[in-house]
Amino acid sequence: MQLSVVILNYKVRYFLEQCLYSVQKATAGLEAEIIVVDNASSDDSCAMVRERFPEVKLIANLENYGFPKGNNIGVAEAKGKYLCILNPDTVVAEDTFTKIFSHLASHPELEANLGILGCKLIDGTGHFLPESKRGVPTPWVAFTKIFGLYKAFSKIPVFTKYYAEHLTENESGHVDILVGAFMVMPREVYLELGGFDENCFMYSDDIDLSYLSLKSGRTNYYFHDTTVIHYKGESTVRDGQYMKRFREAMQFFYQKHFNRSLFFDLMMRIGAFLFSLIKSKQQKNRSVAPDSLLVFTKDKLEIKSTVPVRYETQLEVGIPENKGITRVIFDTRYYTYQSIMALMQKHKNEGVQYRNYLATFDGIIGSDHANDVGGVEFL
Image (cartoon, helix red, strand yellow):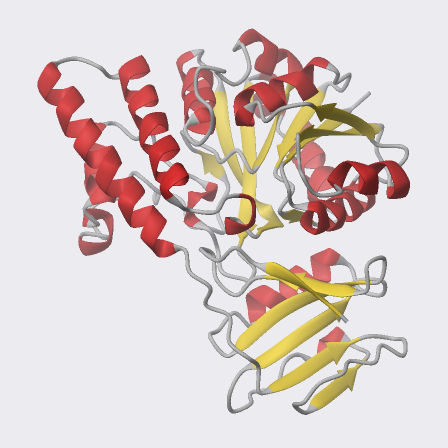
């Protein structure tokens, strides 16, 4: 088997459903399997998978084991030569896996020494997510991130390592750290590295695994030529518990790899606390009511609305400039996720909101900012 896609789910039933539809399309021409590990969700995630995706292997944990252990449980059941560790609040383009495998086949030196491969991630508004590629958060690199020096001195390379700015978002190349929302790697490499460290509940696990890959002499690689949507805030509400776990995760990573002195440990504890505090303050519901709707569909998709609604059948017409906020709804029965993502990136501005319509639950799904929880509206 060529590929095993492992999706760890926790209480994001509708985002998981969309993710699974996209993965099915992306793996249609491959020898692949999809494994969903559910960490004791209180919603009907498991029932939905059993009913609508009977071919998907479902592992229903009886408690929330966290990100590392949950993924390790899924990988233990995987049979593919390659793994894809995938968040449930993502949408994969139809060409994602075929492009990745084609690129590896045409670059045998990369394929032979591959550690972890990531790709371009965008948020629900079409904007690039810089954490798609990162550098090792050494004390100095973490300092430039926590205190915003990477923005203030963006032209000086020594300040721009956190987001691996030696590459633009549209350049492929070697990087240090890749994000756990989307990771492709040989299964044997994952097993040799010991998988995700279960001593960390969540948050620094992807950094740790990426760093272990680097230390083993393997190549971590950012591949820009395919895109995945990561709604990002959906699977994690940034409350007090988030702050506690994020701070613990950062301390875990530094104590494991960089703990050299009491002064260093104190500095990193303070830095991790400040960083987690900033992150917790970022999340807010930024969605506002739209002034008009633009619906792309080839069927009679009637949208009840108090604002003007315009219907189009061809994505090629684009999104006209309007005063106010336009909510764009894509009927996913008729348009590829690849073409939807291309239009989102072309028209990524503050005056446009994007939603995907899924007929299976007759609702629209999306988010309006990288730090938003996002949500579902039923029609």
